[in-house]
Image (cartoon, rainbow, N blue to C red; front, side, top):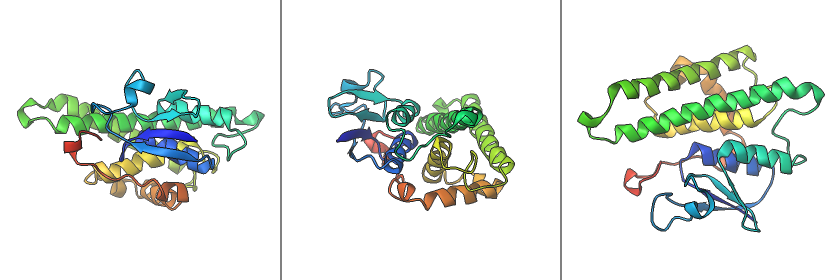
Length: 218
């Protein structure tokens, strides 16, 4: 059986767990803190980042976007998560663009979360403002793309894809770590989109939950 090394609220790990669930690929979930002395992460990922997907033979792959691409290539018949057919190139590239933006929002959210843990007089306000601009710009892009789709159920060709996995995981993470952010009122159609995704079984089974910062993980 495959194994996934994950952390509880991580939007990146949630992407992998959703993809595996959608493709009906069984796996064992291992939750850990990647910088504690007991972590297995460096054994499998030289960058010491989560998530990590481990195969029965011990081979491991990492970085959520690569794991999703790998799963799609290796398990193409298991509920495809990318547009198919010769006319699907533009749709596939667009799905990947959405993933880039959603992951970029998450990167800025994670950096903001850590910076907020520093003592107030040691925080860099210009640096934090830059992260906020990235978050707000990314959310605006997601909202615009959804509006351009006619507020359909899914972002690309109205078919569930990696774009929805990435965007949905990002928005779910914001609900847990940044509930005060006004994106849900600023973009009500994006909020409705997120709520629809959360009704899918794969999303219901992977709802992120916060960890105490004393556990040193996000």
